[in-house]
Amino acid sequence: MKGLKFILAGILFGIVMSKSEAISWYRIQEMFRFQSFHMYGIIGTAVVLGTLATYIIKKYKLRDYQGNPIVFTPKEKSVPRYLIGGTIFGLGWALTGACPGPMFVNIGHAYWSILVAVAGAIGGTYMYGLLRDRLPH
Image (cartoon, rainbow, N blue to C red):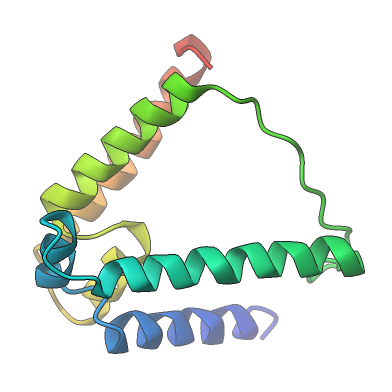
C-alpha cells in the first residue's frame, strides 16, 4: 500500500494526458507542422508549472516523500550535447507521435501499435546505458 499514492498520481497523469488530447497523434502532428497552438499551450503550461514548483521547492526547502532534502545540482552547459539529444528526442517524437509519458497512456487506451515505440524507447535507453562511458559528455 506504500506505492498507492504513486499509482494514483499515474492515473491522474493519464487522465490529464487523455483529456487534454496530448496523446493524440493528430495533435502532435499539428504541432510539428505549426498548424495548431494546442500542444504548445500544454507544453508552455508544463514549463511554467515546473518553474513554479522548482521555485517553491527551493524557497521552502521542501523534502521528498522519504524526508530527504531535494537538491538541485547545476548541470554542465554543453550546447552540442543538448542539440544532439533534443534532435534525437524530437525525431522520435515526430515519427512515433508520442513522447515517453503519453506512450504508456496510449497503451492504457489499447493502442497496441505504440508497443513498437515503447520497445524502441526501452531498447534505446538500454543501449545508452551500455555505451554511456564511451560517449562524449
